[in-house]
Length: 139
Image (cartoon, rainbow, N blue to C red; front, side, top):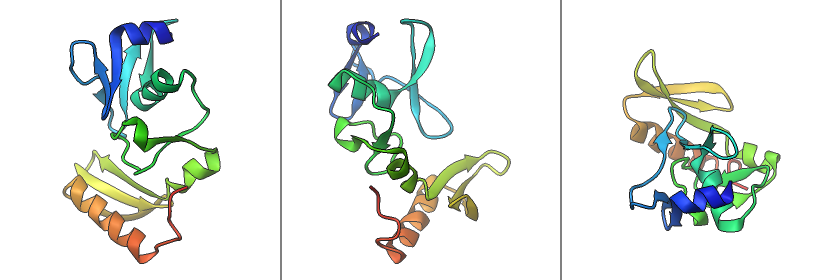
């Protein structure tokens, strides 16, 4: 699989690119980007895992986005960690809630509120994190 990936993609400072220079990946509603891999079988793979695999040659069980931004797939923003460490970053979650077409902020799966834009929801999340500094620090 690694050879197949290296024939078609390259890792640059801010993520994964096709050999023609275009950024690779399709953004999912959960904020992660995926690509379709054809070897050894047709499957979708998370871009941050592909970036790690192409850089280090192996896939760890758990990968974490240091800044908690699921679309920031630069190798500097990725780190290998345990499941417990990764779950600490899932305290706050911002997702597009399709029935209202607003962004929903949750804290440990408890509803905080709906926001018109993702930026508003992220701003509120940051405000709450700063109020509780240390309690919500990433791994």
